[in-house]
Structures are given as structure tokens and as C-alpha cells.
Amino acid sequence: MEQEESKVRVMSREERNAYDGVTIEDGNNNEYERPGSEFGYRGVKIHAFNWQDLLANRGNWWQKALMAVGIAAVLGFLFFVALPVILVLLGVGVAVWLVLRLFLGR
Image (cartoon, rainbow, N blue to C red; front, side, top):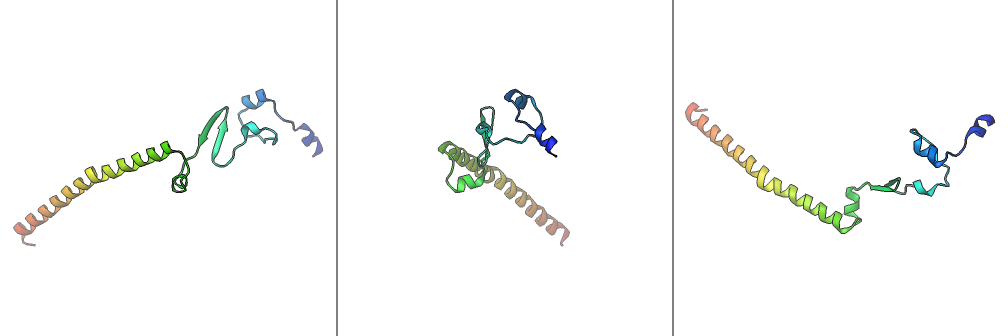
């Protein structure tokens, strides 16, 4: 067991960048530290945005504005497209039912 432990070493930056697999971080490398829901990789920062961020008033103003525009677009689609289509289909269904009832007497 001690022989296996002695073979373990910290990879150099070039080895780490070229290696395509799972590694164990040594704890001294703050460059790749990942606090919370933010991930860092070679200077690129990705934030996992979720509903809790909006409900807890986290995030900046453009994220809130973008979410408001998205919600307005969904509501506009539902009101101006989906609702009229449903009402027309409901009206056609009622008209067919009335015609069938009139002619077939059911």
C-alpha cells in the first residue's frame, strides 16, 4: 500500500491540461476552486441560473429584465394565440353538437 502512495504525485499544469480523465485536486490549486453553483474552466465562468435566484432577488438587473420579457412572451402567446384557438375549437365543437342534435334528434 505504501508503494502505491509513493507513486502518487501532483500533475504539472501541462499534464493536467492534456489529461482527459478524472483527477483528485491537491487543495493548493485555487484556480479551479468551484464555490456554490459556479464552475470555472480556463477563465470561462458559467453560472447555473435557477428559479431560486429570481425568487430570492439574486442576480443582476438584466437577468430579471430578460426573465420578465420571457414571462411576458409566454403570457402573450397564451392570451393571443392559445386562447383564441381553444375558443374557436370549442365553438366548432358546440356547433357540430347542435347540428347533430338538430338533425339526428339525439
